[in-house]
Length: 334
Image 1: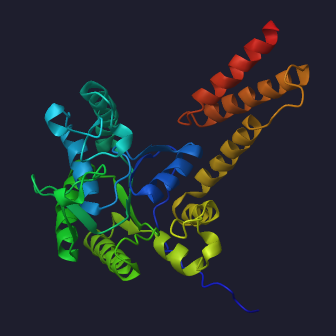
Image 2 (image 1 turned 120 degrees about the horizontal axis):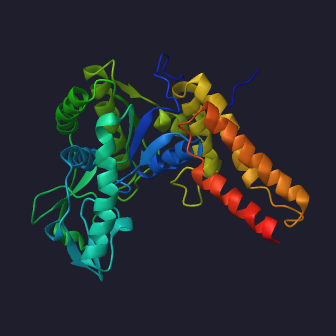
Image 3 (image 1 turned 45 degrees about the vertical axis):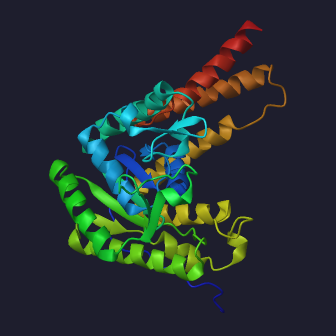
């Protein structure tokens, strides 16, 4: 039989993620897409507490701020184009007043800081080795917030620079948390501002840095080939969005399936199937929403959730259960 794809061999012996593990996913928008699927599968995963971050130095700095329990103040923000921004945060954390911006930033950071020493898995997705340094402070920023380009110096990080930064960071993380394991991926999203060649050089730098980390901490750091799966196994523009740069939803789902195959424990995959059944039931649109039949259907969902929570008390179905109970209460009153 003729093969029309080149399957990417998944690494053997990767540590299996379970539902009672505590996780955090940091990095690019691809990290966010994968993190959202972990949350949908009812894994305990904190996704991007700083918002989307693309370069490895900003991701490292975010982790250091979490470990230090940093509290942001007015001096950490700047005002531009009608909003207060943090150079370390995505624009999701920007606001019209200092107070609102700090409330968003510190509220999210406090939750993440409380978890960082209890993580079982840390998922890091590097997007680009290109960084922007603020000419005033000399610091690498996580987000430029559309400030004029003249405010920044733009350069590609060296392999040695990334490797040295993460050697210290990972050593500190592992010293604080003996059970922590780290998965590293490189985002398959291309950055075309300087052309395909520069994008490839950037990705190559990240891939080599990931390899150095795995070699330095072979029992604690593991690489998952998301980049290779999209660029080699799914080598076709039908797996890309309309911009021909971002992977399509179908491609992300395929990478997610391969991730589950390699990195999710067999028991966790069974639990995910049960969680998916609940989501399918919840997405059902009733033909007669006021009928006794729909009332019994809602009761079945609540019963299924209760049985799952009884068996797996760490699964969080609180919102789904409350939604069903509110609808049942409304039906009983009518």
